[in-house]
Length: 397
Image (tube, rainbow, N blue to C red; front, side):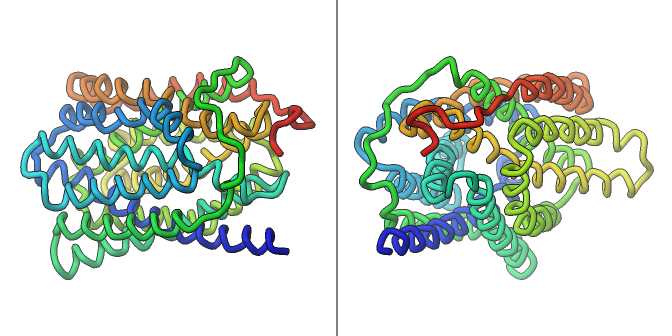
């Protein structure tokens, strides 16, 4: 009874932590491109180059989390990540008058952001029943999206009634990160578990590593250049970007728990392969909507592609549930997710630079045609996913 009560209390605290971290994400993702363009005068090439330092923490995350796991459990690591996120947000708000300091605080914020991505899945899995992992992670995804709504709504209201004040946007983000850290700090789940392995690499997880690399490509192309199509080619304002993000997040509150159930029902192979097909469609819309559709329908279709792409990001939890089902040892999960993040950032740190140069020299269409070709290759990789009918001995407990 006490254990059930502890799990229930921990789940509520994780929901609240996820909600407030979602608010931070909503603030950053709805304002960052406009902030870089308006305050620091970035063009597409500069925006691509910034992704190298911004994604450097993701490249290093395997070593960082492996070190932290020898001293702390996942919940404490999550709290520490929120401290870094809060500090980075406040730095962007008040301490970034030049490019050098901008990069410093982008890296600090990014480190907290990437550490959370490494440990939030394992924390959620510890709170899930066997066979319902997708549902639990979907519920947490819904909470994140609700937080995104609050964050984006805050941006929209401040922009409407106070004006575009990036210092206020990021101050609010820092406060939300600190609150999320407080709730992570209060978790008791997993404190009695055996320490995770410091470094894990297994040939049995090769498909997981490949999917992680594909996700890195997908993430960077669309988070950077999907939004950049709207901002630079169509002059879409920060308030409109925030509104689109709000709509996508509102739909995510309803759809993420449902998609979690669908993952449990249909399995990771079908879900991840379908995601790649949908990604190809989104790529083609970004590449050719402006050429084949008259105004204002081209922009409306691009808005739809932007929203659809953000909804499809919910399917990334299928990677985590897949890993749990094939894990040879439960202690492999967190360090393997960390290695997956590092692998996706090997790609993510270089591809935006190449994509920015392709955009400047040949046009945005070729960036998204490249992404579509990679998604087609990803479809065939996902078809190779196999999940054992019974978990490996000692794994997926």
